[in-house]
Length: 302
Ligand code: 5GP
Image 1 (tube, protein in one colour):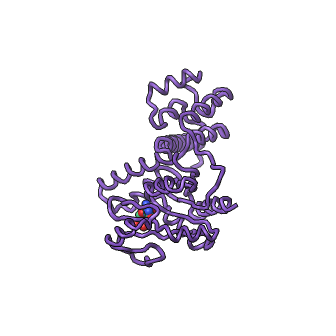
Image 2 (cartoon, rainbow, N blue to C red; image 1 turned 90 degrees about the horizontal axis):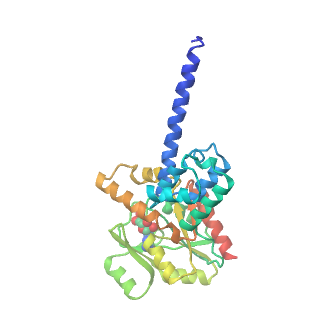
Image 3 (cartoon, helix red, strand yellow; image 1 turned 90 degrees about the vertical axis):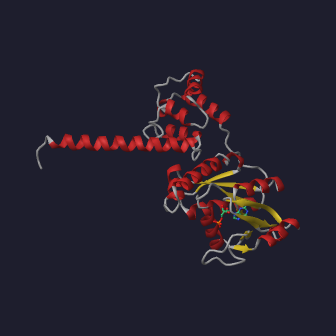
């Protein structure tokens, strides 16, 4: 059609679509803040860099309310203290307001400080379904210089899994023996089902040879390693967004509603543990995430 009056209609429809997309993107970003997939400081930095971005267009009231454990009362007090008008958008804050907000965020949501002294013992953990197994497999295939710990487990092998390569598949009696004889650096029951543990001897041997050792284990295991070896470097793998983690967790649709809800609750609790870690890596792309882990290992070997 060539009728000129049609064009504004089309424009209006496109503008309405864009507005809906932006609202959706802002809602997704709020979910990322609430679930700690993204640090509030990162969102503030994005808003500062680009006031027209999704972060920049977020109202400061919505931003604060999306943060873990901040309710409406607290939000209003903070805005008052920082002398920020509730109608402001994140991208529209003045320099002083931005600095004040940043200082408050740093006090309330401290970020991991890169550790000075580095260890050659790396632990990779993260929420269920974030893809740490895939990242570890990528490192096993592409970085033979890194010793990837092979865990013992009481679960049955899956098709294609090789004893001694992916796991040491053991029965309960053998797992008990490993615990009793102090042969495990850490161990835990994972997903309320099977037991998994890290054999200590191969790790000691690899470290003695000067190699970097990588453990891909669950959160409980990571905490035990921190206790046993306080100098270990703890890496937390994050999903690119909360929505993506939900997709990876329940996307296959093979679990019932109750199981899906249980997994999502677990993932939220697991994400809340990220502050205990030394480094956060976002698993947007497996090869890139693996490279970041390897980079930490080469700097740790220095
Ligand atoms: P899967 O059975 O799918 O191979 O692994 C299930 C979970 O067990 C993963 O989250 C993995 O990180 C964890 N896991 C694997 N090995 C160990 C281990 O030695 N110790 C602990 N604590 N967790 C492990």
